[in-house]
Image (cartoon, rainbow, N blue to C red; front, side):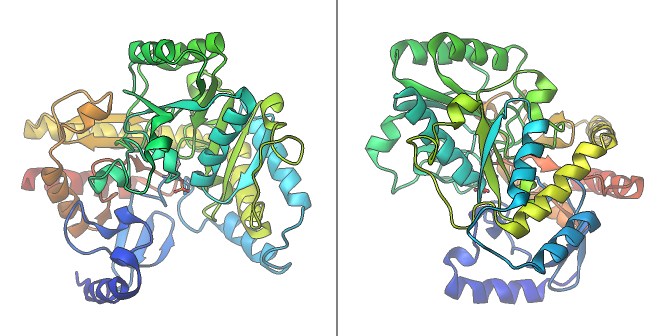
Length: 428
Ligand code: PMP
């Protein structure tokens, strides 16, 4: 399969775009080789500029639970386009989508739309600080919450893939207010809270982590955090940018039965358009301007096209609960198949999975935190990634990302994925 056109585009892109890409992981730096330039996507497939077709498990880093270019979303966007692309003024659609989100996500009574997951988490932390009058917050190692300054400290996803989980440009003062705890380590959280008594505004975490590979909360971890936050007047924020509307209609909080004070959401509520949101208890959300004193704004927030796409996506998910049973079955089929291959080949690697998210880690260790994830053999992962790509399977180009499944995957695709997986593992 030729990828000459992608190669040429990458060389050209490097002249006018830093590193040739608009988001670092896309550059394939961690896996070697040349990034593919994508021309279009449909159902379970993406097509590159050279006309090659791939089954892909990135799904725009989460939101495409129904596969690419779903007809209901597409139709909603085309219809909305006829009425203009941006007004910077309130629309009926924003009211509708706010009510829909509140009806689906248990912790959300009120919600504010923004334009990305990054904006959602930045705004949520500012609000938690404004609401509590405290300045510090706890972040978990290997969790990624976008590229806001105060989150680029021991960050997962692209930050760790590029080998710089702490970024130059973040001031020492900013970094001092971000307290770090290992994921799944309740004792360390208790010690941090004790040592910073009455100074912690919030705790933010991915209730199921997807940015150090897929890492599940251990039984009791989320419940323990909830209890500490209740006792200490700390705002508990679940960053459900990846898990929201994917693990259940109400996200990880619904599936795992622990309800935070605030939730950050992203991508999926725009059906793939640039959208994020933060929401939570009325009492907290009413601190946001113009009702309250905490400022946050956006010309493109609640953009009519993005809201139309999001409404189509969320309405579909709300009215088709079978989507979640199907995603679970697809996930189980795939992960069971991967286990069977690992057993057949006598390989000791680890998998983590929940619903339609999974990771194959190239380590023998059980992966329950960032330290465990970092024991992975990333060179081996790179070889696995490229062996899969050669067989027409496009995985996330980093060991430190979860893979995302969609309802567009039929049995024939799963068979192809599992065949390719075994061939790739054998070739290592
Ligand atoms: N939070 C989480 C959990 C994420 O996974 C991401 C990005 N994948 C973000 C926040 C940032 O979202 P965005 O890239 O839309 O800014």
